[in-house]
Length: 89
Image 1 (cartoon, rainbow, N blue to C red):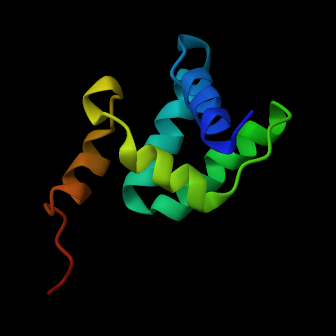
Image 2 (image 1 turned 120 degrees about the vertical axis):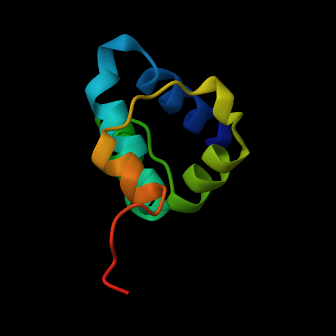
């Protein structure tokens, strides 16, 4: 199995209802720092016996149709992403 298909397999697993909580954590982390989010996906994959690398995970996620991913983000994270948090500037 190619690494990109392994990434897709892991992402598909994360998108199931069974893994909703970890999916929210992973996607929230990814939105703040793609490398940290990728590392969480790699850790999840390792528990499934799948070895991934950070660059491939990031490339695969960046190439995904974002409309296909339905996640709910906490209001605090949405505010931070939208630039609503006062950064003291």
